[in-house]
Length: 113
Image (cartoon, rainbow, N blue to C red; front, side):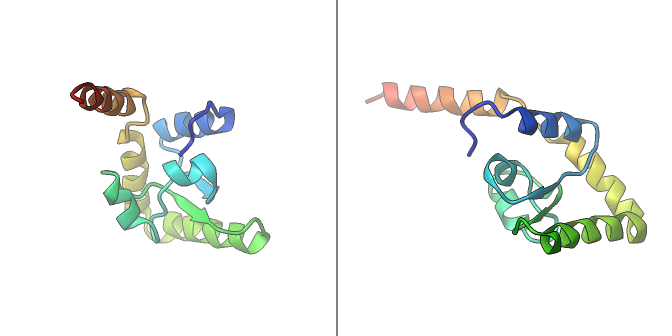
């Protein structure tokens, strides 16, 4: 969970609003916001979301190649699915609306004690 302002992360989320599919290393706030289309379906659904990008583990060329190759293959071999992924990414809400409502609910629960 990212609890501080993160400039690169904020740009990632803006890019997603325009349909850019993220390809990221699984780290920090990126891991919290990007759910791999092949490996994170259950983790995404547990948060009420759908998978929205491609990710890799290691900070080496093999990891990057793995994610890039899956994204490129999806673009060429499953164009319709890739376009639906772009649409799904644009529809996801990364605003502060949902977290704000969660905090209000938490506050109200605490006030009952």
